[in-house]
Length: 287
Image 1: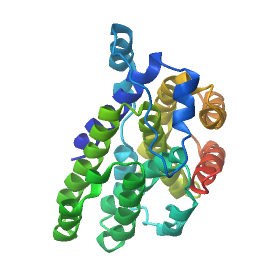
Image 2: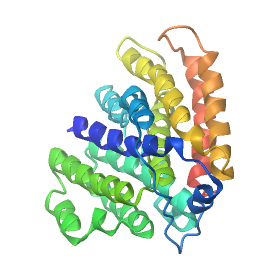
Image 3: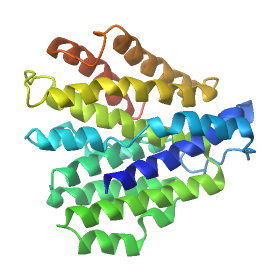
Image 4: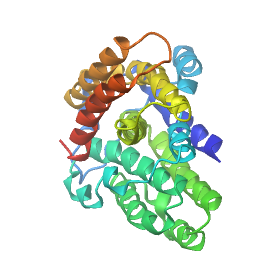
């Protein structure tokens, strides 16, 4: 099932690559349209360069299920306190913030399903539904989908498929409207939250042979971060994206100065956790 999530995120990221060659002022203005208006980015032509960029980069930005599965396998205790508070939904007033937090809440939803906390997924489903509807993606969480969440409320695999189908509709709608910037923010949000949940869970846990693999998975996120930056940089003239890129580059700089190879140590993990938490907390505060 997690392969399906990877396919979803590849599709979301593909849309961002489609927009790589188009970065004018009108497009940037559309990205920051207020919440009561739908942000529709101008039409783009998929040329050979864009297709090449997709082929070369996009497969390296997976959904954070690998990290979440490692957390679960390592017997780490599920901690709802580290997820984005449900009440924060009222803080997201512009589409950029809504898109980022649609990715954030999607990762939190996946976190709860991975740890089989079925009784806690309802509020996350409700929030993702609201954000999707605010972004004019009503079919992602329509009544049929909500009925499925209720029907499969204690079945991990079935719930994972329903989540996949919901985000496939997010993918489809954004792709059809070519809202490339928003698609990129959903991708970035889910990646940030996946890394945050993992680093936060392990930041106070000594490195052992049993959890060493997760340390290595966290290290590998450097490669995914590099690719996210490459895809978002085409929107750098837009202030919201510029600020996000600055903070992503701070995390990248820290990664670049960590130990060579895949051997992340406990102190390095703490430093990384602090950087990721700073960005993630700003995102969930809607600023």
